[in-house]
Length: 141
Image 1 (tube, one colour):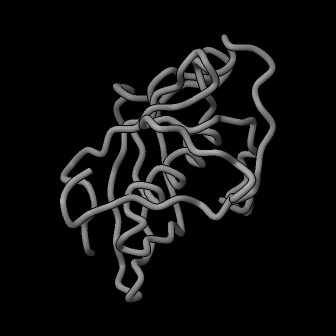
Image 2 (cartoon, helix red, strand yellow; image 1 turned 90 degrees about the vertical axis):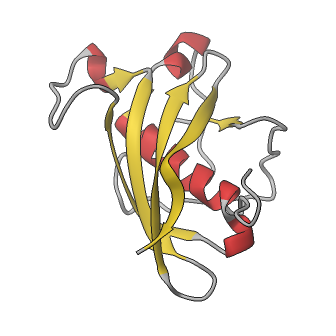
Image 3 (cartoon, helix red, strand yellow; image 1 turned 120 degrees about the horizontal axis):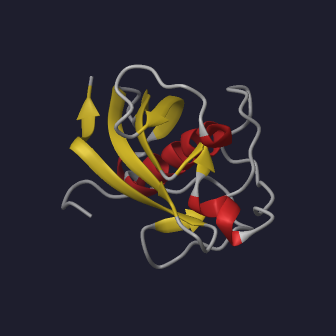
């Protein structure tokens, strides 16, 4: 974590949080109407978690932003993801599942100011995901 910028978690007290930069991945609905803090089921197999869907990457992005920037009271309103390295658009290959996603997010901080940022989200074979804040981390818009 960067000094002055810390992380926050989606309000999910029944879900234990790991000690590393990884959080359990589920099989969320791809609908943008799905609540970010809604618990999701675990993937059927470890192979299914290594490559994750766009919907899972979007939920992971929101989870990572609210976890990493909790000291700022960040609440994520919207996310967008594309497979890393795909350029502007991508064909639905591999059943829509990819190992790495380039994702952006927007939301508000605890004072109501508009904020945003970007993450690289990576699926792990143990059902967790990794995240890396890119493009400067948390930004006030």
